[in-house]
Length: 153
Image: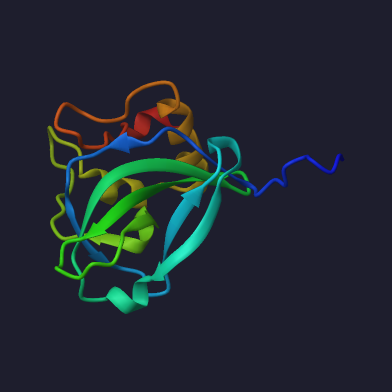
């Protein structure tokens, strides 16, 4: 290894996707808000804030990305606080936040993306990455699209 070689962080990410601005609140009080730096194939996640300090704050998501760490992919949202406080937003795991309004799947409609994604296993989340890596994964309204469970083996 040469002295100028970049140190691998173990994280990489996909493209960022703009999303509809849904409202969220904190689900995991041990979660963190991250700032991303460097290139997509070797990103660094630096803790900006801790979610335990924002238990009552409402948030809006603006973007999403898939981040790979230790061989597993997970969805991260870029979240901004709704309140008048002037603290900055950052990247948060989808599983650390909870949508204020959700809906379950019924006969002719899917559940909302967050509800659907939480039901996936690690293997299915990695397969989800395979399905969306080359295409757009949002609908015309800027909502993330779930794939029918028939797509997963």
